[in-house]
Length: 396
Image 1 (spheres, one colour):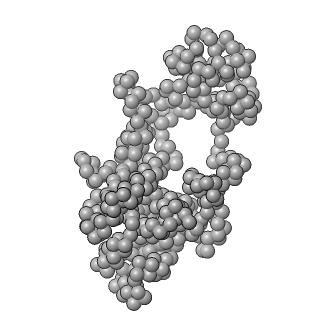
Image 2 (cartoon, rainbow, N blue to C red):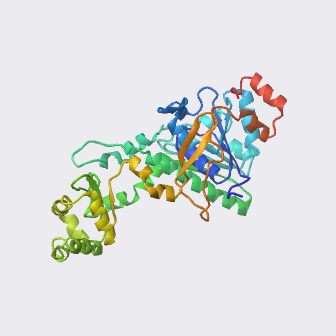
Image 3 (cartoon, rainbow, N blue to C red):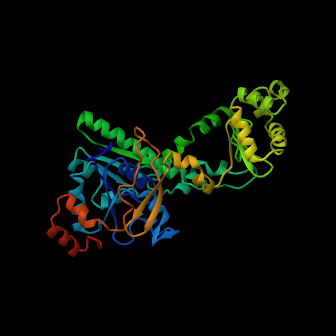
């Protein structure tokens, strides 16, 4: 028995935030039906690189789901969707503001149809406010929020964080909000409407940066791999490749200076406290860099970890995947896709009592489970055939 066994989720979302949220619900045992437009499906199906014509981003965010290709622009499709919503526990949508209502699955109407429904609405800027109609991808919010302006090397131009942190964090926020709403429903018997936006996620991720701005009254400078409130806390060039050393308090600083045979630096009034070192940021970094350049990255990792200082070589993602700790923690799951062959995916980062995580069902082909999904919601073969005849259903 998995934690969410018996929970029925309808995933009308696309791209990354909503699909990730639904995938994590599916990982925990929920029955997730991904409802996609018959022509093309989720946008990420068409994003290269591909495996067997399916985009890699789609494959990363859509395991443990069934795909129902249903055209909500047809009356028959809308009627079928509403019939399913009446039986569902959770609905996730990420349409532009007003689109869900036009497609017949707006929050007010669906909650009247099913008062126990947890309705999760994901958008770029939220459903109210002066930007309520704004369209937002992760990169748009990186630009709008100020994240892009403070990312990168000193003196450089704006830089995008390459792993879509706002999208993925929005998915996590939706996931946790849905679980909280289900707990509340258990107590009250009533569902609720959740709103999660990339805008609010970006604002929340910047919480301590905003606090620093309010206190300093000046914009943050680009720090590259460093941190404006900690020093030395960044990547340094070892003799062969970069290595990250994280000296986040004064005890670690004294431990480091003693370890390199210069204990006097630990008590030097120029560098004694973190505030002193931040005030002399360039001088401190230059001092540490001169030492780090004398050994290889691996030697520094062994040295620092040996004396209790956080440290890591600056790896590639290939290095990360090949590290034995990935296997030890079960983070790479291997499975067989019936259409695409042997596959790998990254596990949900939650473990329950150490139980192994697995792919119960691989990412679906578009419309792969249309008939099965509808039958699971009580549609007869004749009703399914009628939907197909009406042009509301994609090919199975």
